[in-house]
Length: 301
Ligand SMILES: Cc1cc2nc3c(=O)[nH]c(=O)nc-3n(C[C@H](O)[C@H](O)[C@H](O)COP(=O)(O)OP(=O)(O)OC[C@H]3O[C@@H](n4cnc5c(N)ncnc54)[C@H](O)[C@@H]3O)c2cc1C
Image (cartoon, rainbow, N blue to C red; front, side):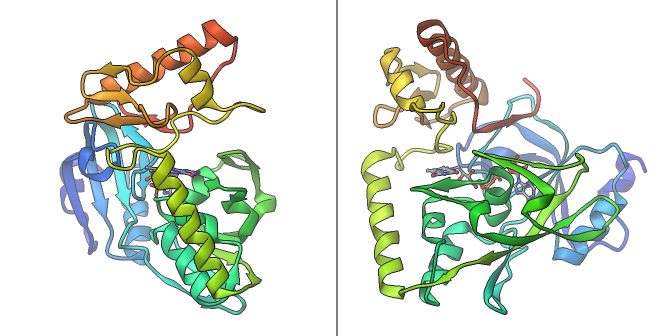
C-alpha cells in the first residue's frame, strides 16, 4: 500500500490525519508532528486499521501523552489515539474491566465508589490505562501490574489475546512482553479487594493534596523525567548538582521539583531534551550514577 492509499483507508470509520501536531496530544505541549494520526471509531475499527497498515509502518499507541515527547523533527509513522475511544469501564464478575483509553484516575474513583480498594494510587497518574500498563505506572506504594488480573492485547494481524502477568517481565516503570512480539494493550481486568468507599476516597484526596503541594502542576510537564535510582531520588541528585531552576529556551528544570521539567511557554522538544541530557551528564560526573529516563522520547531531531 502506498501513502496515497492510506489517505482513505477502505472500510474504516475512524479519522486519519496527516501531519498531526503532537503538541496537542502530549502533556508537555511541545514537539513535532506525527506523519499520520488515526483516531479509530472503536476497537473493531482499530483492529481493521492495524491490519490495513503496511507491515513496516511504525505504530505508536498514545493515550494522554503524559509520559511522551515527540522530537521537533516529527515522527515517521502512525500514531493511534485511544483516549475517549477505548472508553469501556465496568464490573466483570468481581473485577473491574477498563479499556485502554480510560483515564487511570477514573479507574481509581470507580473502584472507590464501588467499595473496592487497591487502585487509589491511580488517581495520581494522569494518563490512560494503556499508558499505565505500558509503563507499570505507580506511586505511593502502588503499581499498576500489582493489581492486574489479565490484559487484552491486539497485534498488527488484528489478533486479540488474553494475557497475564506471567507473559511479561515487569519491573519498576518497565514492562516487556516475553518473546518480544509487537502487541498493544486494549483493556485490563483489575482484581481488587473489598474495601471501604469513604476510606478510599479520603486516601485519594490526601494523595492529590500531597501532589499539589510537591509538584509543579500549573505548568505543562510529563511527571518525573527520570526513574529514581535504587535507594536514592533523581530529584535529590539533580538538585545537588545545582540544576534546579535551570532554563533552556522555553523549558525549565522545575524550581518546585527537580525531577520535573516544565514548559514555561513555547518550549521546543529540543529545549526539554537538552535539559534532560544536561541533568544526565552532570549527575554522572558528580555522583557516578547513570540516570535512566522514565519519559519516552520518540521522533527525529
Ligand atoms: C503531573 C504528572 C504526574 C505524573 N505522576 C506519575 C506517577 O506518580 N507515577 C507514574 O508512574 N507516572 C506518572 N506520570 C507519568 C504518566 O502519567 C504515566 O506514565 C502514565 O501511565 C502514562 O499514560 P499515558 O496514557 O499518558 O501514556 P502516553 O504518554 O500516551 O504513552 C506512554 C508510553 O506508553 C505507550 N502506550 C500508551 N498507550 C498504550 C497502549 N494502549 N498499548 C501499548 N502501549 C501504550 C506509548 O506508546 C508510550 O510509549 C505523571 C505525569 C504527569 C504529567
